[in-house]
Length: 280
Image (cartoon, rainbow, N blue to C red; front, side, top):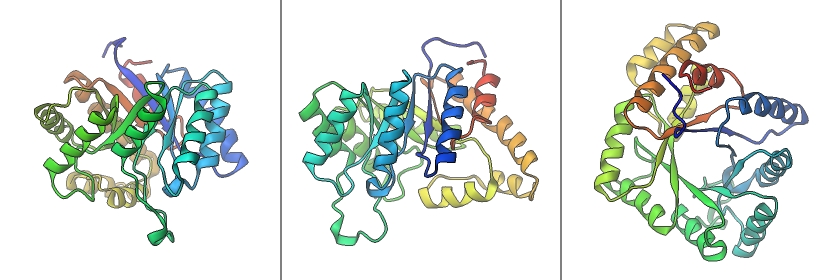
């Protein structure tokens, strides 16, 4: 596949909890920068539990001249706290936000007030106009809490109607799920870009556990194939690189506007997949 200049690459990190993890992340960021992504994003824990870690990494990246987008949700914060944080990001040179509802943190119970992503988008637009490019989340295989497929598509449209610029999808391994979703979004009147989220396969057990929790489907044939490798991690990774490279090629050949990789704070196999696609 030849590189297309209009394809957008982005890479997602989670904020490290230790100094060792932070040092490793900075090295991974430097290595992945060679692939010239449009931006890196940094996640935000349930209820904003990693807010300070996220902010620290964001500011450090910006000081190094890196384009970076913090994930953001209201969590347990009030409007004034959120406005202050957004202003701090703006002052640091951040011009992109991944606006999310966020997850309910354990132990919060009734003390946690859920603010939906469309409300957060509207809040940012009200107080900061168009100073941020706003990314939101999309779910080709339906959000696990959605009442129906059509409702989930309508909710995504509500995020765009509130002022979102583009969307990043939950990861998936069936390209048909993405293409059908895009058809339904178009029928609903959504005309903004929706970038497929890509999860490289690193560890079978971790992938199954995470997927079961977030509602991402692992097709039965894929589960069985990964099971067949047992504890042979090298074979799992090699198979995963081939599989995900083929998935990405299919997506791009059929009109996907780019790719958003969930790197798990590792250089490989994301870098290998991108190079397999000729996008380096």
